[in-house]
Image (cartoon, rainbow, N blue to C red; front, side, top):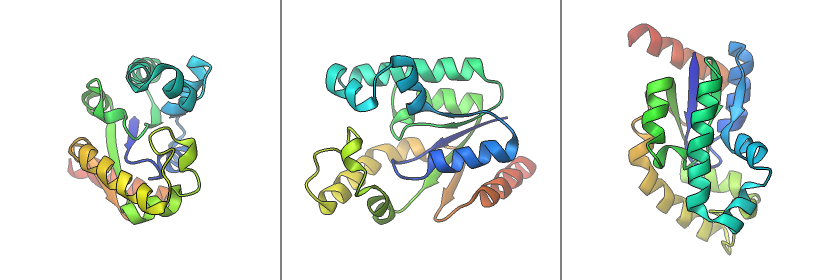
Length: 172
């Protein structure tokens, strides 16, 4: 089984992904962490030195490589991963894709202290600017996220996601 987690920054993809990988006894991969490992540079440095287009190319290549290397996997994608280079089509074709939908107000609460470390959220002057940026970003990404096999809205846990997956697998 492959499970791909998609959603906005701060949705909890990495935290939940680690727990799901443990539950299912499968490898876990955070795509951004894998890009950093393979490139030998931070995401922020990649954006600064090479630009977003380069990062998105490396992201797509790393996604393809990770999927080729693992038949079983829980994968936490970057927030923008599904939106570039036909990555969403690849995710949908190679595993069960789950959209973690979190209200923007909650994303702001989770990200307000960490925004400076995220290239697409850095340099925002205050929480209101962060909220505006997140709403704009979500508006452009929702059409990709909404194509996921499953959607989990609100609060969730490893157990609730596992029940959702079981229900999906038994009802198709």
